[in-house]
Length: 192
Image (cartoon, rainbow, N blue to C red; front, side, top):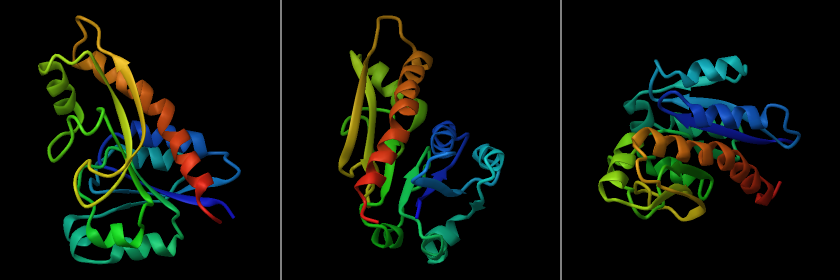
């Protein structure tokens, strides 16, 4: 039986797209559902393009009910992949899927992580600090923003004259290259 992945995203979903592409014809795993807290998110169109079911939810459903946990359990989800999902994961979801929720962060954690540190805010902080390198971190989720155990880090050099757009571009190249492969490796380690 194929391993089943749920993707959570809040926006455009470029990482979600790469993961959908990677697992489209995969023999051992599939994307079972895409979930979002933003009913206008472009990731919903991406899911539709791959004929993957999707579900939008609000804060009440996410934080005050067990609906999302039940949905994921009913779908027999093996791994939850956050791809640009900006809300803190509630405790009921963490308990229901221990060490089965992963996230990607556009910096080398523990640097430049925590509440409010996402997207261009991270890249700006890295530029302002005059860092000579940055990178990505793929990590497990716990009850705090960006504090779960790191699974994979990749780095790139920041050249003189690099702006936010260039740093973002270099980081996304690494994200798109590594995230689907790390998902695949984690699924292989899971017992059937």
